[in-house]
Image (tube, rainbow, N blue to C red; front, top):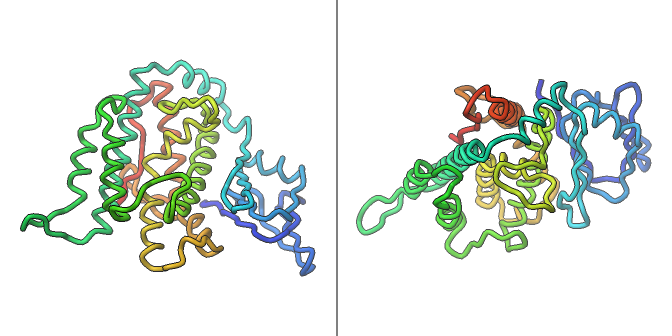
Length: 306
């Protein structure tokens, strides 16, 4: 069963009774309920929201990701369970003891799929252009770069691909920056949702989101989530491109735009030869990663963007 993603932007009181999330609107005097077991994500985006401790306990027991937003309505905090897998201790140990060659091979797979998915985005959104009298297909160079990624991406293909990709997707004047001009804020919001979803899947697979295979910033509590989300980023890029193309005010990030990012988690992706909702695909990705650490397989299952 595909679980629900809930977004709250009004001053509701959220509590729990008989395994149900109770949503109370004090102003309207109304009350609604949703089974906790049916929920995957909750986004809290209003200073007036109150949440009972008992509800938080029940949410973490059900591996629900709780995302809190700041005054700019950007996700800034994540709440996850400390114990969410029966073989967690074994998997933690395997993860900690993973060799450097293994981690470099896993990073190679990750970047190959990220660049391949970026190429698929360009192929989908681009129209054939002409350069020096010849048809020019901008996704072809990225497809070649994806095949050239070496162990640990020692030749820096990820950075080279990014410089090419962003200019082709959003124009020569676009710079991908954390605090840059639109569409950067929309990209940041989408990535934050994807990051939370991947971190939730990692916890569900009994892995530590903190211990990365490539990212190692000591101030980052979600290094592994930042690693594993890389091939999922192009799905956000494509959505933001669609928003930009169809809605001139997409960058204002109203409820409708935020809802689209949550809906992305339920959208179908292609993984391991089958079509699955993205949230299910993420669980397959993190489960296969755990198997790599345990020595059961050598390949991470990532989605392909088609």
